[in-house]
Image (cartoon, rainbow, N blue to C red):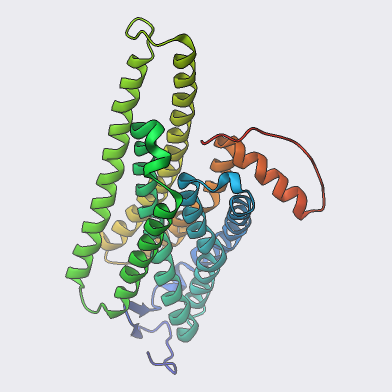
Length: 327
């Protein structure tokens, strides 16, 4: 990287590792850079605060130290990284591009690209792991806690983070068309996407079987056992639906951004397509702000402890009780 390089709007181009630098388009779409940097800066606030509260809530309450919440913790760490680091870097990235300052553009661009890929890839793999975990919880039922201890889930989480970091750093050594690297990324993405889809299909099939089993016309189980099974199944279904909301927001944000990126490729990165990409760019990180709201909306125990955490942070002491159940 040439730290002394300078560019103007007369057609100068350059490179910064895998970033191809040109500022010819800036004068036509300056407002989109202002919009993108402003929205990213604003979204960074709820993403940071919301996920910080979720992480503190899980850390400070031993009753929440469960396998599923361990995966939820990993997802919240990814979202916190997006809000605390990636989105401010993205704002600086767009401002530097608008001001045509190569050095901060290169540094902020590389930092945001590498870290965004790390957090996003790890979040996607974690979502796949959560989907499989929910299937195991329904499939194994009473044997779940025995076969899926927290220690084993922590090892899986660490492996996912290392894998995400290795893939992200690999981009620094990519020059040219990087076809092999793109193929590898597409393969990994397809694998985890397929695992997520299969997990939810299996969850649907298992839930239908459980419904038949608790039907008094189909089984001779005592009423007390059927009631317990119905309650447990209701909790599991609610947990699955909660994660479907998370998956849905992630996919929606990702698809919108990838669509804008495809427009850029089809229009050969003309000023119009770049402007569209700038406007859509903050949407790629919107799910990091929405996820804490989904947790608190759908998971009662996290909502309860999150309120207590916030009250303590602002100096309000409120005592209340809530029976702890696995959601």
